[in-house]
Length: 320
View 1: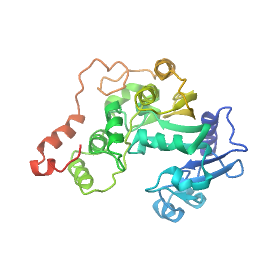
View 2: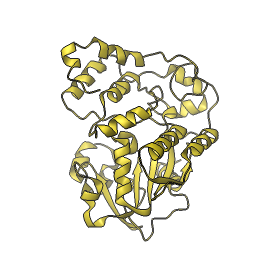
View 3: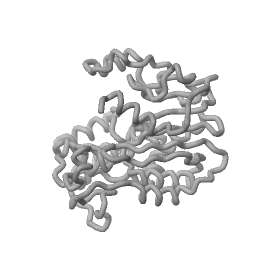
View 4: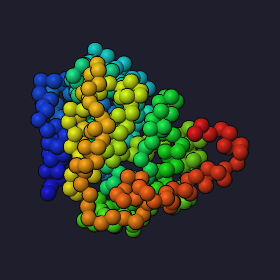
């Protein structure tokens, strides 16, 4: 299947029977392959970089000449503040964005505030089971609470350390062909990366990692907790779980005044409909089939050990 065909299939999976025609919205991080094109809707492209900065960042990539012009550069202001009179919106598209945001509840709240009642947030989200996050822990609700209470503008230290300790050179196709391949997935970084990552974080640098790690059902679990305990007001209007030999799932959320969706039911449904390849790995990791009852061991513990070995003077300055 050609790259263009893959992108068209991705678009169809996300949009389903929804159409942007006649609507106003934004797409975050479109690069050269936006889901919604300018001729289809009144759509504005948003990124944390200018068009010129993106061209320099992706210099050498095939699609750099097709990079879309960025209309709004989103940095310190809220989305509503940045958009001004363009808000409220009918839709927001974010493909492989939500996993990067430092404050999950805060970001979803900004999306909510920028949409009109009935407006849709369309998300494409990586499924950790088939990405380099395969051996990372699923994001706990406690991390959601802490990130929001701190109003994080960059990923927390625990998240950064978990990334460098546990990301792998995952092969999505091989995992789908036989999931036991996960037992042999090589780690991307050796242990020497951990102290360097910690130093960069401690120096105040923005370390870009997947701040949130999901499976389809765990995403619904966090939505259940955020809507029931943190005042988030979104309903689920569409969900498509990760498909065969794919690495992402598709979600449409609708801004509402009163939440009607039972996300606990949707969590159970997402678990029941999400396919698993043949083969069950023996490696222990959150969210992997048949691994829930096993003790959590492995390289992840090195991140904890690295923290413990720091001098007390350094530890006293770390905001965990």
